[in-house]
Image 1 (cartoon, one colour):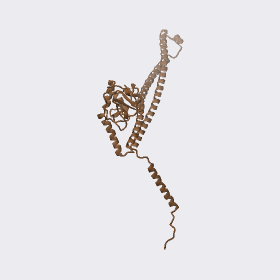
Image 2 (image 1 turned 60 degrees about the horizontal axis):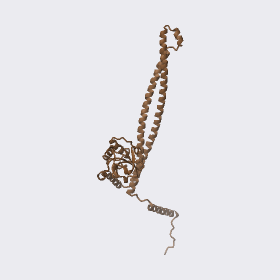
Image 3 (image 1 turned 180 degrees about the vertical axis):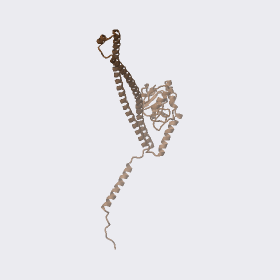
Length: 341
Protein backbone atom coordinates (compact mmCIF):
# COMPACT_ATOMS: atom_id res chain seq x y z
CA UNK A 1 0.00 0.00 0.00
CA UNK A 2 1.47 3.30 -1.06
CA UNK A 3 2.22 5.93 1.54
CA UNK A 4 0.49 9.27 1.11
CA UNK A 5 2.52 11.13 3.77
CA UNK A 6 3.91 14.52 2.65
CA UNK A 7 7.71 14.87 2.63
CA UNK A 8 9.16 16.58 5.70
CA UNK A 9 9.94 20.28 5.08
CA UNK A 10 13.41 21.54 6.11
CA UNK A 11 13.40 23.63 9.25
CA UNK A 12 13.70 27.42 9.03
CA UNK A 13 17.07 27.33 10.83
CA UNK A 14 18.47 24.82 8.34
CA UNK A 15 17.30 26.93 5.41
CA UNK A 16 18.97 29.99 6.89
CA UNK A 17 22.30 28.18 7.37
CA UNK A 18 22.22 26.74 3.85
CA UNK A 19 21.42 30.15 2.38
CA UNK A 20 24.26 31.85 4.29
CA UNK A 21 26.70 29.14 3.24
CA UNK A 22 25.71 29.49 -0.40
CA UNK A 23 26.04 33.27 -0.22
CA UNK A 24 29.51 32.99 1.31
CA UNK A 25 30.58 30.57 -1.39
CA UNK A 26 29.35 32.94 -4.09
CA UNK A 27 31.15 35.86 -2.42
CA UNK A 28 34.41 33.92 -2.17
CA UNK A 29 34.23 32.81 -5.77
CA UNK A 30 33.47 36.41 -6.77
CA UNK A 31 36.47 37.66 -4.79
CA UNK A 32 38.68 35.03 -6.35
CA UNK A 33 37.47 36.05 -9.79
CA UNK A 34 38.21 39.71 -9.12
CA UNK A 35 41.42 39.32 -7.03
CA UNK A 36 44.46 41.12 -8.34
CA UNK A 37 46.74 38.72 -10.16
CA UNK A 38 50.13 38.06 -8.62
CA UNK A 39 52.60 40.69 -9.88
CA UNK A 40 55.23 39.52 -12.30
CA UNK A 41 58.91 39.59 -11.45
CA UNK A 42 59.35 42.61 -13.75
CA UNK A 43 56.56 44.48 -11.95
CA UNK A 44 58.05 43.64 -8.56
CA UNK A 45 61.47 44.81 -9.72
CA UNK A 46 60.01 48.12 -10.99
CA UNK A 47 58.25 48.75 -7.69
CA UNK A 48 61.32 47.82 -5.64
CA UNK A 49 63.51 50.09 -7.78
CA UNK A 50 61.09 52.97 -7.13
CA UNK A 51 61.26 52.35 -3.39
CA UNK A 52 65.06 52.18 -3.57
CA UNK A 53 65.05 55.53 -5.39
CA UNK A 54 62.93 57.04 -2.59
CA UNK A 55 65.26 55.48 -0.03
CA UNK A 56 68.23 57.06 -1.81
CA UNK A 57 66.61 60.49 -1.52
CA UNK A 58 66.29 59.96 2.23
CA UNK A 59 69.89 58.70 2.35
CA UNK A 60 71.24 61.85 0.71
CA UNK A 61 69.26 64.03 3.11
CA UNK A 62 70.56 61.91 5.98
CA UNK A 63 74.13 62.33 4.70
CA UNK A 64 73.61 66.08 4.46
CA UNK A 65 72.28 66.29 8.01
CA UNK A 66 75.16 64.12 9.24
CA UNK A 67 77.71 66.39 7.55
CA UNK A 68 76.01 69.45 9.03
CA UNK A 69 75.90 67.81 12.45
CA UNK A 70 79.63 67.06 12.39
CA UNK A 71 80.39 70.64 11.35
CA UNK A 72 78.16 72.12 14.04
CA UNK A 73 79.62 69.79 16.68
CA UNK A 74 83.12 71.11 15.91
CA UNK A 75 81.87 74.70 16.10
CA UNK A 76 80.12 74.04 19.41
CA UNK A 77 83.21 72.36 20.87
CA UNK A 78 85.40 75.30 19.76
CA UNK A 79 82.96 77.82 21.25
CA UNK A 80 82.73 75.93 24.53
CA UNK A 81 86.54 75.81 24.75
CA UNK A 82 86.67 79.55 24.07
CA UNK A 83 84.04 80.25 26.74
CA UNK A 84 86.09 78.23 29.24
CA UNK A 85 89.25 80.23 28.40
CA UNK A 86 87.38 83.54 28.65
CA UNK A 87 85.95 82.49 32.03
CA UNK A 88 89.46 81.67 33.26
CA UNK A 89 90.69 85.08 32.08
CA UNK A 90 87.76 86.75 33.87
CA UNK A 91 88.58 84.91 37.09
CA UNK A 92 92.21 86.10 36.82
CA UNK A 93 91.09 89.72 36.37
CA UNK A 94 88.81 89.44 39.38
CA UNK A 95 91.69 88.09 41.46
CA UNK A 96 93.84 91.03 40.37
CA UNK A 97 91.10 93.46 41.33
CA UNK A 98 90.84 91.77 44.73
CA UNK A 99 94.57 92.25 45.28
CA UNK A 100 94.25 95.96 44.47
CA UNK A 101 91.34 96.33 46.86
CA UNK A 102 93.38 94.63 49.61
CA UNK A 103 96.29 97.04 49.05
CA UNK A 104 93.93 100.01 49.31
CA UNK A 105 92.40 98.65 52.49
CA UNK A 106 95.83 98.58 54.13
CA UNK A 107 96.16 102.37 53.74
CA UNK A 108 93.25 102.74 56.14
CA UNK A 109 91.10 104.80 53.83
CA UNK A 110 92.13 108.07 55.62
CA UNK A 111 91.73 111.44 53.87
CA UNK A 112 95.05 112.20 52.04
CA UNK A 113 95.36 115.78 53.45
CA UNK A 114 95.01 114.49 57.03
CA UNK A 115 97.51 111.71 56.32
CA UNK A 116 100.00 114.37 55.10
CA UNK A 117 99.46 116.51 58.27
CA UNK A 118 100.06 113.53 60.56
CA UNK A 119 102.92 111.98 58.58
CA UNK A 120 106.30 112.03 60.34
CA UNK A 121 108.05 111.91 56.98
CA UNK A 122 106.16 113.99 54.36
CA UNK A 123 108.44 112.84 51.52
CA UNK A 124 107.74 109.19 52.30
CA UNK A 125 104.01 109.94 52.42
CA UNK A 126 104.06 111.60 49.02
CA UNK A 127 105.72 108.52 47.54
CA UNK A 128 103.01 106.34 49.10
CA UNK A 129 100.30 108.64 47.78
CA UNK A 130 101.75 108.39 44.30
CA UNK A 131 101.70 104.59 44.59
CA UNK A 132 98.09 104.74 45.80
CA UNK A 133 97.10 106.83 42.77
CA UNK A 134 98.70 104.21 40.56
CA UNK A 135 96.70 101.49 42.35
CA UNK A 136 93.49 103.45 41.86
CA UNK A 137 94.22 103.87 38.16
CA UNK A 138 95.04 100.17 37.87
CA UNK A 139 91.80 99.35 39.66
CA UNK A 140 89.81 101.40 37.16
CA UNK A 141 91.63 99.71 34.28
CA UNK A 142 90.93 96.27 35.75
CA UNK A 143 87.26 97.11 36.15
CA UNK A 144 87.08 98.13 32.50
CA UNK A 145 88.77 94.89 31.44
CA UNK A 146 86.37 92.86 33.58
CA UNK A 147 83.34 94.59 32.09
CA UNK A 148 84.62 94.04 28.54
CA UNK A 149 85.42 90.40 29.30
CA UNK A 150 81.95 89.86 30.77
CA UNK A 151 80.31 91.27 27.63
CA UNK A 152 82.48 89.04 25.41
CA UNK A 153 81.72 86.00 27.55
CA UNK A 154 77.97 86.66 27.46
CA UNK A 155 78.05 86.98 23.66
CA UNK A 156 80.04 83.76 23.24
CA UNK A 157 77.71 81.87 25.56
CA UNK A 158 74.74 83.13 23.55
CA UNK A 159 76.41 82.01 20.31
CA UNK A 160 77.23 78.60 21.79
CA UNK A 161 73.62 78.18 22.94
CA UNK A 162 72.36 79.09 19.45
CA UNK A 163 74.68 76.52 17.88
CA UNK A 164 73.52 73.89 20.38
CA UNK A 165 69.88 74.59 19.45
CA UNK A 166 70.76 74.34 15.77
CA UNK A 167 72.58 71.08 16.45
CA UNK A 168 69.50 69.67 18.19
CA UNK A 169 67.35 70.49 15.13
CA UNK A 170 69.86 68.87 12.77
CA UNK A 171 69.94 65.73 14.92
CA UNK A 172 66.15 65.64 14.76
CA UNK A 173 66.28 65.83 10.94
CA UNK A 174 68.97 63.16 10.97
CA UNK A 175 66.74 60.77 12.88
CA UNK A 176 63.71 61.50 10.67
CA UNK A 177 65.62 60.79 7.45
CA UNK A 178 67.14 57.63 8.87
CA UNK A 179 63.66 56.44 9.85
CA UNK A 180 62.33 57.25 6.37
CA UNK A 181 65.20 55.41 4.70
CA UNK A 182 64.65 52.33 6.87
CA UNK A 183 60.90 52.46 6.19
CA UNK A 184 61.45 52.50 2.41
CA UNK A 185 63.81 49.53 2.65
CA UNK A 186 61.26 47.66 4.75
CA UNK A 187 58.60 48.37 2.10
CA UNK A 188 60.98 47.09 -0.59
CA UNK A 189 61.59 43.88 1.38
CA UNK A 190 57.84 43.40 1.74
CA UNK A 191 57.36 43.75 -2.02
CA UNK A 192 60.24 41.36 -2.70
CA UNK A 193 58.64 38.82 -0.39
CA UNK A 194 55.71 38.52 -2.81
CA UNK A 195 58.15 36.54 -4.97
CA UNK A 196 59.18 33.00 -4.22
CA UNK A 197 62.55 32.34 -2.62
CA UNK A 198 63.81 30.99 -5.93
CA UNK A 199 62.65 34.12 -7.80
CA UNK A 200 64.32 36.39 -5.25
CA UNK A 201 67.56 34.44 -5.48
CA UNK A 202 67.51 34.63 -9.25
CA UNK A 203 66.89 38.39 -9.17
CA UNK A 204 69.81 38.88 -6.75
CA UNK A 205 72.09 36.78 -8.98
CA UNK A 206 71.10 38.80 -12.04
CA UNK A 207 71.80 42.06 -10.20
CA UNK A 208 75.18 40.86 -9.00
CA UNK A 209 76.11 39.49 -12.41
CA UNK A 210 75.11 42.77 -14.10
CA UNK A 211 77.21 44.75 -11.66
CA UNK A 212 80.35 42.65 -11.70
CA UNK A 213 80.42 41.84 -15.38
CA UNK A 214 79.75 45.41 -16.57
CA UNK A 215 83.42 46.30 -16.77
CA UNK A 216 84.17 43.41 -19.11
CA UNK A 217 81.79 44.39 -21.87
CA UNK A 218 81.19 48.15 -21.63
CA UNK A 219 82.26 50.31 -24.56
CA UNK A 220 83.46 53.69 -23.27
CA UNK A 221 84.45 55.04 -26.66
CA UNK A 222 87.48 57.30 -27.06
CA UNK A 223 86.35 60.53 -25.40
CA UNK A 224 89.11 62.56 -23.72
CA UNK A 225 88.67 63.83 -20.13
CA UNK A 226 88.44 67.60 -19.72
CA UNK A 227 91.09 67.64 -16.97
CA UNK A 228 93.73 65.49 -15.30
CA UNK A 229 91.81 65.51 -12.02
CA UNK A 230 88.64 64.31 -13.77
CA UNK A 231 90.62 61.52 -15.42
CA UNK A 232 92.17 60.55 -12.07
CA UNK A 233 88.77 60.53 -10.32
CA UNK A 234 87.24 58.32 -13.03
CA UNK A 235 90.20 55.95 -12.91
CA UNK A 236 89.87 55.68 -9.12
CA UNK A 237 86.12 55.01 -9.31
CA UNK A 238 86.70 52.25 -11.89
CA UNK A 239 88.90 50.38 -9.40
CA UNK A 240 85.88 50.07 -7.08
CA UNK A 241 83.65 48.19 -9.53
CA UNK A 242 82.07 45.26 -7.70
CA UNK A 243 82.02 46.97 -4.28
CA UNK A 244 78.55 46.85 -2.64
CA UNK A 245 76.15 49.77 -2.30
CA UNK A 246 75.60 50.62 1.38
CA UNK A 247 73.67 53.65 2.59
CA UNK A 248 76.16 56.11 4.10
CA UNK A 249 79.11 54.18 2.63
CA UNK A 250 82.04 56.39 1.67
CA UNK A 251 84.67 53.74 0.97
CA UNK A 252 86.82 51.94 0.61
CA UNK A 253 84.74 48.79 1.26
CA UNK A 254 81.26 50.06 0.37
CA UNK A 255 79.67 53.17 -1.12
CA UNK A 256 76.49 55.05 -1.74
CA UNK A 257 76.32 57.25 -4.85
CA UNK A 258 77.77 60.48 -3.42
CA UNK A 259 80.17 58.55 -1.21
CA UNK A 260 81.74 57.06 -4.35
CA UNK A 261 82.11 60.41 -6.14
CA UNK A 262 83.57 62.07 -3.05
CA UNK A 263 86.02 59.20 -2.55
CA UNK A 264 87.02 59.16 -6.23
CA UNK A 265 87.80 62.87 -6.31
CA UNK A 266 89.60 62.53 -2.99
CA UNK A 267 91.94 60.02 -4.66
CA UNK A 268 92.54 62.69 -7.32
CA UNK A 269 93.57 65.18 -4.62
CA UNK A 270 90.32 67.17 -4.76
CA UNK A 271 88.12 67.56 -1.68
CA UNK A 272 84.41 67.80 -2.48
CA UNK A 273 81.43 67.74 -0.15
CA UNK A 274 79.51 64.64 0.87
CA UNK A 275 76.01 64.86 -0.64
CA UNK A 276 74.41 65.15 -4.05
CA UNK A 277 72.68 68.35 -2.93
CA UNK A 278 76.03 70.06 -2.27
CA UNK A 279 78.19 68.35 -4.91
CA UNK A 280 75.98 69.87 -7.61
CA UNK A 281 77.43 73.28 -6.65
CA UNK A 282 81.09 72.17 -6.58
CA UNK A 283 82.01 73.16 -10.14
CA UNK A 284 80.76 74.45 -13.47
CA UNK A 285 77.37 73.12 -14.57
CA UNK A 286 77.20 71.78 -18.14
CA UNK A 287 74.65 70.14 -20.44
CA UNK A 288 74.52 66.51 -21.49
CA UNK A 289 76.15 67.11 -24.88
CA UNK A 290 79.18 68.75 -23.20
CA UNK A 291 79.95 65.86 -20.82
CA UNK A 292 83.52 64.57 -20.67
CA UNK A 293 84.92 61.56 -18.75
CA UNK A 294 85.30 62.42 -15.09
CA UNK A 295 82.43 64.93 -14.95
CA UNK A 296 79.78 64.48 -12.27
CA UNK A 297 76.33 63.60 -13.64
CA UNK A 298 73.16 64.24 -11.61
CA UNK A 299 69.83 62.45 -12.03
CA UNK A 300 66.33 62.43 -10.61
CA UNK A 301 66.10 65.88 -9.03
CA UNK A 302 69.60 65.72 -7.48
CA UNK A 303 68.93 62.48 -5.62
CA UNK A 304 71.57 60.51 -7.55
CA UNK A 305 75.08 61.25 -8.82
CA UNK A 306 77.52 59.31 -11.01
CA UNK A 307 80.81 59.83 -12.85
CA UNK A 308 80.59 60.15 -16.62
CA UNK A 309 82.79 57.48 -18.22
CA UNK A 310 82.27 58.14 -21.94
CA UNK A 311 79.96 56.93 -24.72
CA UNK A 312 76.81 57.66 -22.67
CA UNK A 313 78.06 55.43 -19.84
CA UNK A 314 78.61 56.29 -16.18
CA UNK A 315 80.25 54.51 -13.27
CA UNK A 316 78.21 54.71 -10.08
CA UNK A 317 76.93 53.05 -6.93
CA UNK A 318 73.33 52.37 -8.06
CA UNK A 319 71.08 51.27 -5.18
CA UNK A 320 70.69 48.85 -2.26
CA UNK A 321 71.45 45.28 -3.29
CA UNK A 322 73.59 46.42 -6.23
CA UNK A 323 77.31 46.95 -6.72
CA UNK A 324 79.47 49.73 -8.16
CA UNK A 325 79.27 49.33 -11.94
CA UNK A 326 79.18 50.93 -15.37
CA UNK A 327 75.69 51.63 -16.67
CA UNK A 328 74.02 53.43 -19.55
CA UNK A 329 72.66 56.85 -18.66
CA UNK A 330 69.43 55.84 -20.38
CA UNK A 331 68.59 53.29 -17.67
CA UNK A 332 69.24 55.36 -14.56
CA UNK A 333 66.51 57.98 -14.64
CA UNK A 334 65.98 61.56 -15.72
CA UNK A 335 69.21 63.44 -16.50
CA UNK A 336 69.45 66.72 -14.60
CA UNK A 337 72.84 68.34 -15.17
CA UNK A 338 76.55 67.67 -15.42
CA UNK A 339 79.18 69.34 -13.24
CA UNK A 340 82.84 69.75 -14.15
CA UNK A 341 85.14 69.95 -11.14
